[in-house]
Length: 233
Figure 1: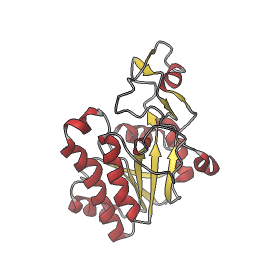
Figure 2: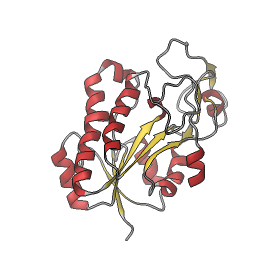
Figure 3: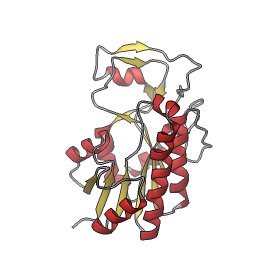
């Protein structure tokens, strides 16, 4: 049998796509009631039961972005403390952790960010994911994926013309994961450099083009350098 990989956040958006599309990895999806990242006791109980080789840590709080501003306690609990709890237990059992981070850990000003570039989040979401990264980086048996992805098809009626990114769809990441899962350190994950509007319009012809005001807390140039990823896939 292939090495077992536990997926936290088993009922999440990406986890559901991964469950449906994956044909390579040996995955066990655990929702909150089976593995609660806010409880080290719950985490340890599940890891001792299933004895996984790795943890794919997708659980956490992402959208809506405003939630990270309005409810910082929830953001801290789910993205920082929950991740730290998971790292502590993984370290005690020598289990690899693969952490789903984000391009929002970069400042979003000049773009083309390398994995080794300085990180400086400009909003609470980015700060919460960086907080999670900090504990993961302390544990060497780990891999951090700084990802730009969204649902397919594009979920919104409007798309930003002045926000440049490397967006991919969840399904694209499902194909990439088996090729990178044995790596360590940090890898930027994304696709072609383009505006969100250009990305969305390919599959959703009626999407409307809008712009983010420049004083927004949303980084306008989220593009990442993908050379490391391209060498691996």
